[in-house]
Length: 427
Image (tube, rainbow, N blue to C red):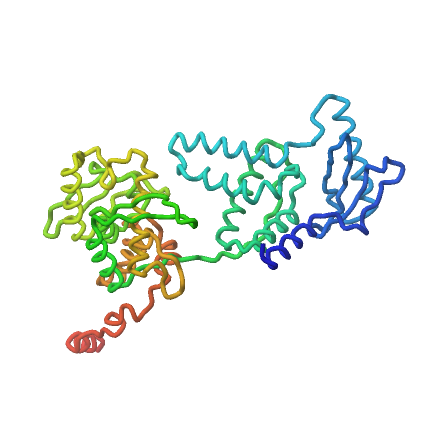
């Protein structure tokens, strides 16, 4: 553990540990009943030991006399509940509410209302960070200052602002669940968090050409992945699907998660003066509607489907990519592994700002290319076709776009004839 990490952990513990000079026994009550203060909150807290268990609660006051009264009320409530055979805690612990939220989400995932990976990600956040911090808390004791201390802990551990916002979202869900069940009278205010957008990297024209040309050259190559002890983890074979995937994604604006669900039955070839694909796959991120491809996507799709037919697939109900894998999460993992190896051998894993490129960078690339190479395409049309919003387009996908990338448009001028006609009309 680094010295910086040790210092952060010590700091975190000190913010929630009772301040020694503030611990005071409540007069005329057992020595096991005390009030104290912590660095993470301006309020006094009450603590009571009983049968080897610790019960504590915020008194919600900074006044010492009022804190004594709140501690006595807390103590008497514990004794009353114990004598009545009720649970001693005033409300379920945080962990109980958190697990109930995950169970409710699991039911919605099963019905197809939420993404399949939501609970996987949120269970990870709970296990690694939230439960170790909040496990001892009753939901009613979680206030602004407790939450603020938790966010400071995450910052000390050098979690990215975007990741901390995901923790805030999950915490809000758990507290809202407790409020709906009338376990807490109101939701505590949440500390404000700065919104830091992290736009994904993309490939410029030269990098994109290097990428798909190398993908074509690597077909048939087998890669051996090893762990830190040089033990073989897996073998990865580069297939023709990798190059087709790169060209397909860059000419259709789709997300990697769309590739996972896309079947041949979702793809229609529209034969007009310039043919294009009309994609009608399931809604993604609450967006639905047809996705219209660039003309180049038609040949790529036909090539991919022919490749699948040679392997015994290619039926309408077959998936366009990796149809042999019924587990579609695994199919996407296989494609990502091929793509990551390609990024390594082309030395394109990182961009000039040291941002990591992923399969998602191909979607970013397709959107940047459209803005740069189109003649006056408006962002609303592009956003609708890419199943996103103008706000998301500008915040995440086009943050790297700058005027020099469309220099011809910036320097363009109206013709002299047009200027002359306008001058005459002005008279």
